[in-house]
Image (tube, rainbow, N blue to C red; front, side, top):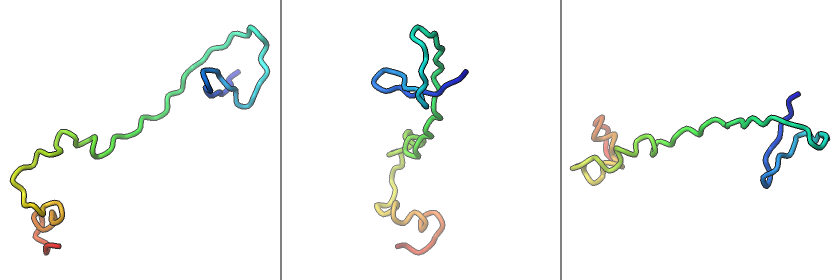
Length: 72
C-alpha cells in the first residue's frame, strides 16, 4: 500500500489520516519537487557589469543603438 504524507514539526502527517498499528514498519521515500528554474539575473550573472564604454542612455535607448530606431 502507498500513502501520502507531509512533514509537520518533524512528524509525518498522513493524508488522509490512517490508523496504522503501533510498531508497524514503514518505508519513507522523499519526493523532491521540480527545481525552480534560474532567473535571468542568475543565468547572466557572469556578464552583469562587463559592458564598458557604453553611452550613458544605452539602457533606455538600446533599440536605437542596436537597430537605429528613434531615441526615446
